[in-house]
Amino acid sequence: MEILQLRYFYESAINQSFSKTAEKYMVPLTSVSASIKRLENELNCTLFNRYSNRIELNENGKKLQNSLCMIFDELNNVVQSLSPKTEDKQEIKISVRAIRNEIAEHIIEYSSMHPDVSFKTIFNFTDENMDDYDIIIDDKSDSYINYESFEFCNRRIFLLVSSLSPLAGKKLRLKELWNQPFISTGENTNTHKMLLKACRNEGFTPNFVIHTNDLLCYNKYIEAGVGIGVGRTDTLESKNNSLTALDVTDFIARQSVYVFYKTQTAQGNIKDFLQFLKSKAL
Image 1: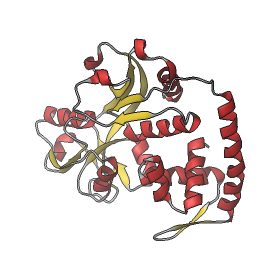
Image 2: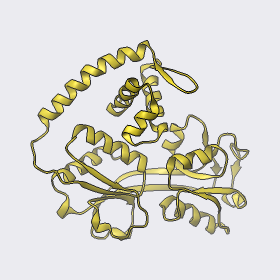
Image 3: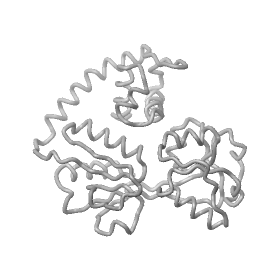
């Protein structure tokens, strides 16, 4: 059970809406609904009655909401009393080029503990002036030669399709997909480049029918059967069986994501946030 799960639940309980919670925390609706579903599984009970176009807090949910009201008040008071008094109000500027949803959730959690710290997050894959950023989240790259770094995560990458796709459950070779439609997260993204390289090594260029840098839309296109996409194991876990990984025996890829920073500027709240990210590294 995580504090972010409880905050998602508490906000949804107040508004009787998952979508309003997603808007407040600036995360996809699926992140909120999946997080609350995991919380219900851990508690072994439902917290909301779900209808076609709305949710309603049930008796279990009301009990948890009442308890959290007191707990969050006390937690906020304790955090404020423990937080060192500092005049460091500088904005933390982050270029996020990988695992955008996950980094957004960590920023939300950190902000809830340090409400005086502000962030500027840029989801830009074409900006070449990296000196504007305090922190960069990206794959390992020679572009950041003046930066220190630590590995944040290393995860297996899969080709994803709708669970209803005729390709699901089949053992395949990558070259057998030469005539299939693909969906891209954008020509400058690392997953696009990874897939493009793997396919060209097999003698074909994938037929990208849609390019989108909106991850929510990206997953929806795959779920709807529009084309084949690329994703990690945590994507599969959050989609409740609407997506499945293709068994492509010769597509074995991993994504290593690093946190890059400059030692001379990693002071004050920037240094503190870097320590927070290190505690979240897998």
